[in-house]
Length: 429
Image (cartoon, rainbow, N blue to C red):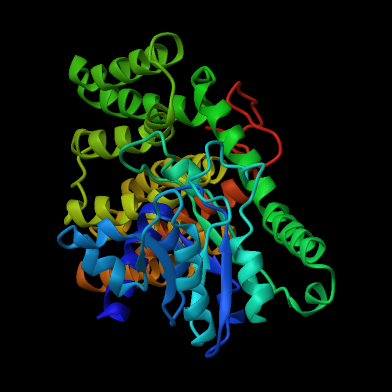
């Protein structure tokens, strides 16, 4: 039951938080160990356990076990009930010590509470270090990065954020046991702090940069946004001579202006702005093609779904890659339209767009890139076969490769800098 639920939660967290865990293979397959991590969010016990086959035994308030459903779940994942009220700490410690002596993995958060800022709290409780010293069990420091941005103690519900859990090499308590009790305990606790903070510091700084970027003013219209806006008006307008061909461009231009001077900036506003050219072209594409005497791609829902799935990790996780993906997608749509005019083919866009997305994922090595490349290439091949197509698909495949080549040779588009730029990590919402 635990393994089945662990697999379900891991898959869910990989989608919602692009969750990953590194170094968990260092934990012993059997025998005692103490796991000590920073405590940035409500999710931490689960985050530490998702990729660990053995249950990690965490202390949990005994009253939580009386909550229907919750008690069953936390017990399944290894929590054990203790009375965490003031003055009962010794009893909780003794319960953890007995589990370590029995050969279990025991997890402790030395901060004793969820972090208020994402950094380790100034004062750490000595329970984890003392437990390792008294039992001789190895002490495994763990860094949880990104969880404070996902679910800080000030929020009632989580929101998407990239989360990484890193298990560090174990600390052998033996050298510290040879020192005087207080000195050895302090030195072991200091070593624990240093190992956790070494990889926590860049993550917290990145979170702070994210917050600054999300609050910055939106940029003026960018080159690929202008191209996305002008294509429907220029092509459909010249073919139909109707105002209906122009109003999507006018509405989009108004949105870009409002985003710059009126709309309050934040995470959602930045995401919508970055993805907006794709949404515009997907919405206007069928009308433009009909205006040019072409048939819109069949199975349009499947094509939209595969594209949004390919776009999701970049918009969600890496702003700079997201912009490059959108720029390449806009150019691929334009090149694909040229190929469609020259060689109409029902499977054209079903080949060019997934092929661009697959080559982009292969080159960028982003989140889930191995799965993305396999799924996208399989989709392109299957669509080309099912919808019919032969050598006439070569031009459409070339359109996809041209879109990728554009992002490869000009990773920043036309090199125009915007107020949304962010040095260091390269995020540019």
